[in-house]
Length: 109
Image: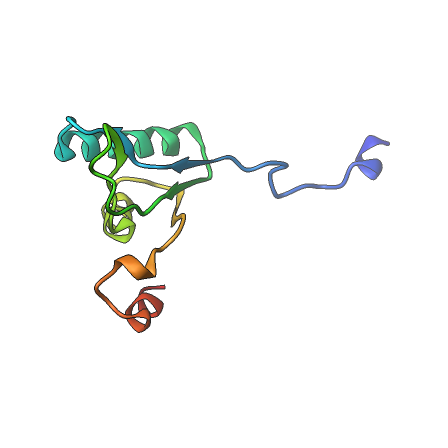
């Protein structure tokens, strides 16, 4: 019997996530960009993606194409109310770019 050969799998064979670098054109307004990002995450959630990873970036505004998310935890707090099942996470935290101490970063984790 095939059922004796193939184990009963409860976990999916693969998980799919999105690493959102938060890149945008320099002339794009922050309000529009963040609203489109929220829509991107809603869509990923509805399509069944498992996770969204948001990158933290500082000090890159001189380029024509740059990232603009100095505090991903704040956006994640907003996205919690906009999503149903997708996991939300930060890709990295730059401790050197923050005005807070290492202890505050540890508290937030």
